[in-house]
Length: 229
Image (cartoon, rainbow, N blue to C red; front, side, top):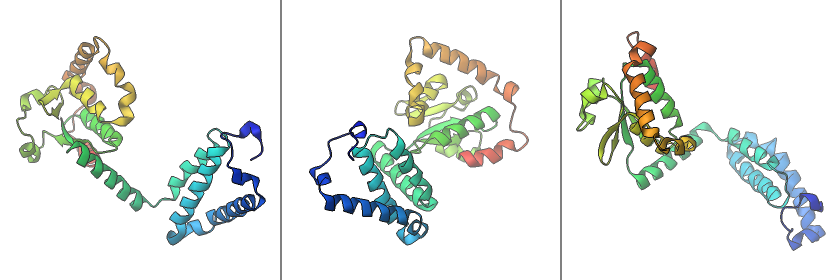
């Protein structure tokens, strides 16, 4: 705390008092001891994690050690129980749904290997579950596809919006808008002429999708559709 080269902000006046420094020192030793002992018990784990988080954040606040403390804090996620993570994720998704409304439907060709793999990839990036994947080739899903053009769906994937169904490259662009992990490529999709280029490439692949990647006639897609649904 007295190394000027590492000081991020001026330290509080309390840092000049021996009693306060002693409390910080002993407090650090106690928390570190709990981090290799009490953290292994469920009843005390989250209390220990909260104290450790405050300690490391406090160090980072006043002492400039680039990403050193954030590496420590990011590792705490490994000590959170999976069922608790699932509950937090479900709560966050529900709040997003309450704010933005229900998820939009992406209708895809469930008989196309490329399509099934593609929507599976998108599903894994859909942190907030803003896209509902529906296989339009499955007759069980037909009652969920309102005002749906099945003939058009044979040539391009369709995405539901407030203004109706859109397809092809435009549909993919709308999907990207709902996936924060893909926002980095969103500006590229609005470059001048990109819509025409994207549509041309999309149609070329879509027309030849069975020839290039095959069909789901061997049960392969049934396995992967279960993971993507």
